[in-house]
Structures are given as C-alpha cells and as structure tokens.
Amino acid sequence: MRKHHPENERIKRKYFVFLKEAKRQNEASVDAVAKAISRFENYTKWRDFKTFHFEQAVGFKAHLTKQCNQQTGARLSKATMNSTVRGLKAFFQWLAMQSGYKSRINYTDTEYFNLSEKDARVAMAKRNKPMPTMDQVKRVIALMPRESVIERRNRALVAFTLLTGARDSAIASLKLKHVDLVAGSVFQDAREVNTKASKTFTTYFFPVGDESQQIVREWMTYLKEVLLFGHDDPLFPKTAVKQGKAKVFEPVGISCAHWSNATPIRKVFKEAFEQAGLPYFNPHSFRKTLVQLGETTCKSPEEFKAWSQNLGHEGVLTTFLSYGEVRQSRQFEIFRALQSPPVSPDISGVNEFAKAVAREMKAQMAN
Image 1 (tube, rainbow, N blue to C red):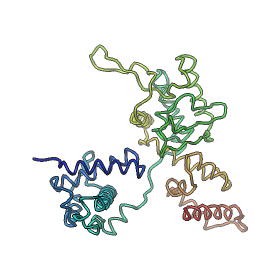
Image 2: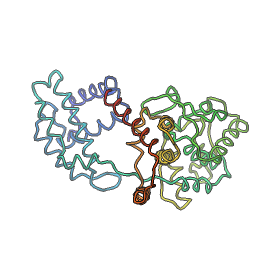
Image 3: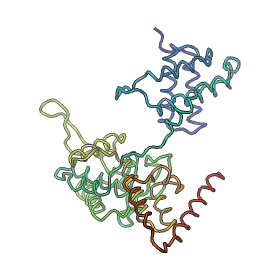
Image 4: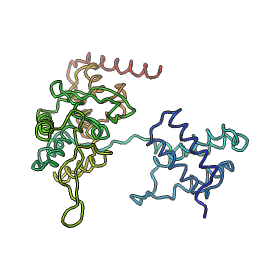
C-alpha cells in the first residue's frame, strides 16, 4: 500500500523551507508541523493535497479523538490535538495560495480544522506545573555521591542549574570559558551556546547560598588543574564508555566532548531525585523555583526586572505569566493574612510595582 505521494512530498519540502527561512522557526517546530501533516496523510491514505475538502478536516478531528499517545498509551490530550490541527490549518492556508493549488483548495475550508470552543479552552488552559522547593533541591545536592569523576560532574551539574537557572540545552553546550567565577556570571553566547531563540545574554549567579557556588568552583578547578581542560572544552563533558569484560559498554569516566543533546542531563536529574526519595523534577522546573525565590527576595520593580532578565526573559511579563503562579499553599497563607490586614499598610511599593507592570503591558501591546 502506498505510504507517500510524490506531489505531496515536493510541496511539503517547499513548506518546511518556508517555515525555516521565512518564518524563522527552529528544527523542533518544523518537526512538529511535519508530524501533524504526516498524521493527516496517514488518515487520508496519502491522497493528493489538491483533493482537500472540509469533510477531510472534520473527519480527521474525529479520528484524532480516538488516537493514543505511543509512549503512554493514553488518548491524545486536547493540547496535542489543538497543536496538530493548528499546524494543519496554517499549512493548508499557505497551500491555498500556491500555484497549482489555488483553484483546487477553498481557503475557507481550512477553518474546519478548528477545535470546538470548549476543547480549545481546555487545550489552552494554563495549569500549575510541579516544581521543587529550594529545600528539596538542596537536599538532593547534599545527598548526591561525589566519589567518582562522573558523580562529581553530576553533582556540579545539578548545583549549576540551581545557581544559574540555565536551560538544559544551554548547559549541554556551555564551555569553561563561558563561566566567570570571579564575576559570578555565565555568558550565554548564542554563537556557541544552544540558547532559546538564539538569544545572547549574561546570567549572574542567583543568591541560593554558597554551597552550590563552591561545588561548581571545585568542579571547574578539577577540570582545569587535574584533567588539564582548556577554555574551549565543555563545562560538563559527556560520559566516556568502552567495552568491558562482559562485552557490554560501560562508563569509564568523562571524555573531552560535549553531550549532543540534553537527554543525559535529564537522566542525571531523575536519578538524583530518586536517590533522595523525592519525585522527579526536570531541569526546567528549577527556573520556576528561582522565580518564586525572586518574588520573595526582590523588593522593587527594578530588582524583579533584573531577576527576570537574569533568566533570559526580555519582558518581566514572561516571568509573571509563564513562571509566576502562586502555589496553592502560599495562596492560602496570603488570604489568611488578608483577613487580618495591618492597620496602616504601606502600599507605596505595591503601587510602584503595579505601575511598572502596567507600563510593561502597554509596551508589549504597542509592539
């Protein structure tokens, strides 16, 4: 049975180039669109895109509701369904403007890819994601073994993530020269570091205690003075393996090379939290922990703006809207305190902060 259509393949390649070069989307985004289109082609048995009709979109949405996630076995989430049909809608809208397809595809038929309002609201709803407390993270670091070079690297890796809030993809590509221990900073240079949206910025160590900074300092000293690593060598080298006596590959130390992706870093985190008897929290969750620390530490709009900037956010609203949910336990504490407010509360700082947020919102709306 046919599992591709030559004409479809040619126009898909053209669309992927359009997304990458004109829309400046990264490989991950393009891959997600390619997966959505592949789902649709599988449903239509690889019919020519020129035969597209609104009934195909309606039938495909019903088809999606019966599909399961290959990893979990559960039905596809509303969020996955929404991203899939949105990707298809954009593709067919683009297709309806291309030569050879204009007269064949009705532009308004693409609107049938929309989910119902109810399903769309469920898909787009923001939900609180789990994150570790500062005490939990410090407990994990304290309990991590430190005998072998691999164990020392892993411990420094978790401490560095807490210290900087850097994304795991950036950490995997950092070099020794990017960290300045004297200034307490990390230069995330997009020319060499895999930063989000290829942004270049400097991160200063967050005030999370001296323990993490000391662990990172000792690790970098070991790399430079014992292993004789240079400035262009990786800050967290990948594990070196070789075939052992049992004819299977075994870890034997570290190599002078970067990890190719962040998957090994997430594995380190998973094992560290399991060893501490705690549920797994991924590296990205540390950023939410740091945001909540900033909400209690920063005393002015300028301080929180600097805190936000330190995470690589261009606008403070990104920090608020994406990372700044109030924990339910904290929400309870706040409302309990509001039941007995002070006689003469000082709200000058609150007013100043509110005005700063309003200015930020107005500037973003203007853009």
